[in-house]
Image (tube, rainbow over all chains, first blue to last red; front, top):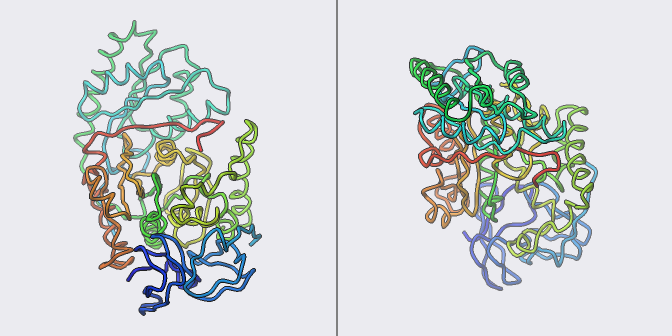
Length: 91
Length: 387
């Protein structure tokens, strides 16, 4: 296991080891081991997409919206300041 | 679920049995320190306030002093004042008596005839009090008597991944068992306040959540500072934090998933058996802890990533880290390694049971690492606050 999903609703996993481009990323989701392929190098504790997010869709971590996708984000892609924008919501 | 505690005459239940030497102002702090150093079983702290404060600022100091004195971990109080400070002895004792009827003695340095004369009288009174305290036996009480403060400091990426979610799971468990859990550090809510507000039990509580955050922002704007700017910091971003919402969510995870049932101002008396509540405290750890201790928390659970030494004179602080390197590096200061939440083999649920067991053991008398080291650092929030 080299990544972790905090909440079952999350669209991102967090790398718990340094991950290289092309490497298999494995994590547990709903009690099952899942894998995706890393599109970029992922620094430890950085995020990568585990589901596809279209531009403008919410990025979900801790089961909550942490921002909106600023571009289309593919599964396995590094998710950070280059492709997420902060968005204040009125819940 | 039960723990062994000390019953106080005001009905509250403590898990320590200290005599508290309370300096009413900075001018009494050294005398209080000398008194405490002579009496085994007594504690004090270096009060830096108590005089030359505007009314609203002085009120924060008064609330911390009265609240710490009334904390059920304290058997009795010896108050020492200089005599001419703004926090006059009659004001301090009145504030304490509004919260508790436990034993109390008072000494005014300018009336006793200086430090040495005061020390002699206060030491005699404190010695008598610790002897009385030592007669008290622990009795069994339900866990619903516990008010648990939660805090984070020296955070790193593992705080949001392991230690804070673990404290959140503990908080959910405590709420289920009928206790009170306090979520603190208003500055850390900023960016996720709409998420916290959506968990408020009533519309009034929702308004209060926004109120304490806006009040904080306004107080800082008065001195030309903008709290939302510069967050997340370059260091946060390098660590993998993308947005302010994400940063704040990592912190508020300590509050678990239950509804927020009350919002308390700094150092105000917290009710037992209230479930999850918020206290408006600064991000500065010792002053946030002091606020919750003044609110009546008998124990604090504290997550750290980098490793911090924080303790408190009257309340045990249980420190946990999700960073196994930090734990190995600072085992002297940290009580529990929470890294299995990330790396296994234990699950979050299993680690939560382990943490709850640790809380109960500490409630029953096990000393925390900060207690064995004698850590007592304390700070009191100000009107133009710490962040």
